[in-house]
Length: 499
Image 1 (cartoon, rainbow, N blue to C red):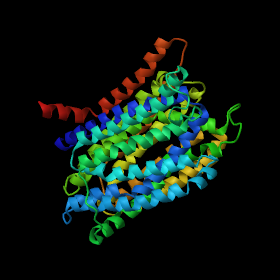
Image 2 (spheres, rainbow, N blue to C red; image 1 turned 90 degrees about the horizontal axis):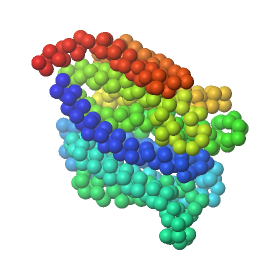
Image 3 (cartoon, rainbow, N blue to C red; image 1 turned 180 degrees about the vertical axis):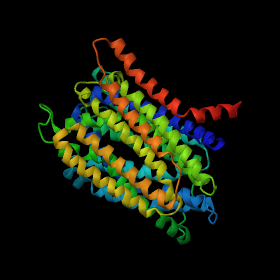
Image 4 (cartoon, rainbow, N blue to C red; image 1 turned 90 degrees about the vertical axis):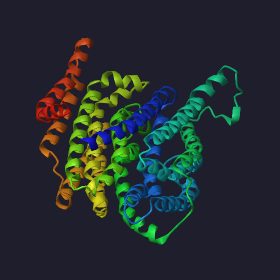
């Protein structure tokens, strides 16, 4: 129990920074939907899907390799830090330069003619992200959660300030005559450009601070360190590529697969903007999973040598499923006010009905992350590629097959289907190579119950808003009551132990 409390404490710190920071960042969607047109939102969705995909290429699994080799018995953690950061610096210079030079081709290929500068900025954003990856991982490994959280918050606050300055404040000051119309070359017709520029400035400014907090590295490329790390991380690269395909392919491909005039009076890129904005409503689930991942990955590696670690991993999984299932119900039944609060402008409500599906997809992603510990600590990372490749294949097949017929729901189901397949496959192989006593039946029941209660609450609607609010939120209490009843034995033992 003490180990679970320690993990919960670390997750709470990471979660506070992630939820607070991302909540601040999430408020930008209000700015985007209020001040930018749907065309700009569609461009934002597509380009950031590309960034998410290329981020995996730039870091190629070195964060996980850093954890694995830093916690081993044969290597000095400082040596691992110097070598992994040096390797990433070298590869980033090559990859970043390549993307920069390919910017004109990318602009034409992705239907942004004459806007090659967007992809040059993208190359710089990717490079800065890669140079921050290992220092942030080092802070996590050393249990310096407060330093990690502080740096993340500074980065997010800088991004928000630059967004507000470029999208809201400067245009207002120009209209009021406080600034000249050509102030610093300001372009009134820019939209996604200022989103990218804000991200670029925020990431670039935070690098010296993060490097200082983590400890500056000494350039070193030692074959006896780099070679085994590369061998370990290479399958994780392909896993990451397949995994990010699963997560982002629907947003990346949506506008290109959706038939023109599927939604009357709306272009495919505008529809993609609505689709991407509704993904943002599932962000709370993603925040919890991200916070859990920050704390759990180094925790799992540190506990791997304990003979009781399988039982501990099972307990962590069970608590994770209960908490995230409850969160899914709470968000889904309150979408009637959460959605309009954060997505300003017309037409965004037409996509609210896909949010419970997206929440379940993200929840299964979290379950998969729990399950994936078996191939990380047994060094069977090659399985990760095949599992995520299968998920990516399912994702592409579903989105190509269902988006032309079902629009938004087709895209959402591609996310759910791929994570479901990955979860089942990972569980099957994990139990063969590294058996963990998960409460599979009970956990599966909670997931199905939560999904059902989410849509019962979502679709409940009468003419009385007060009754609607009460009935919808009763779904949360019903779910919680069933969980307490089914976990009464564990709760009784827990309280008796505390007394």
